[in-house]
Length: 202
Image (cartoon, rainbow, N blue to C red; front, side, top):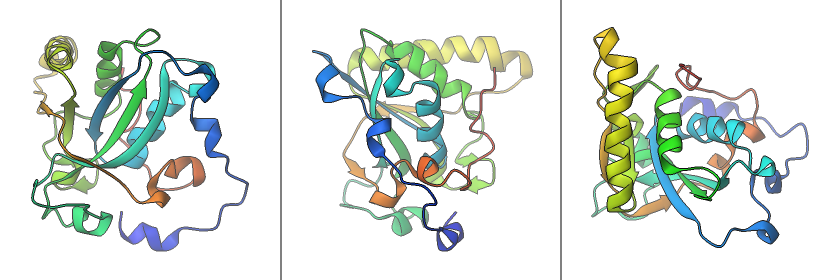
């Protein structure tokens, strides 16, 4: 993935980030945050926004890609450092959502639908702890839901195939926004790299 950054081309069309953010005028009274890691964060963000576009009021209000779950002694990690695996941070997406429109359980199930949670520290050709499958929970309620949905998905989709989910479920820790060029990357660069596991698996 690092080598692909050298091939970034200028945008051929004008990019409007507001298209991928809910309007402040329609902001709900209550919002929640979900944080997921499922390999390269470009694809994780892209598939969530493709299926829950804020303009269609499907519950997702805003996404941000960044780094979390790493060594607490490492502050403000950058992309190149995280890619070495030395900091143990995961590439992740932080999702602000309206729980009155889309429930946390639905987002967790969608997370499992859109990557391979049975490969440890790997998605497709991307290998390393930064590409691990993880759910970082923001409350005891989210933790309980994440564990319940994981058990349901395991029983329905993976046990029959003899596979085991290895997704980490852990409390959310310090979050660091990724560099600006990573935000909404695949919307800015439609022909950019996308991990082949980021698709609907069922």
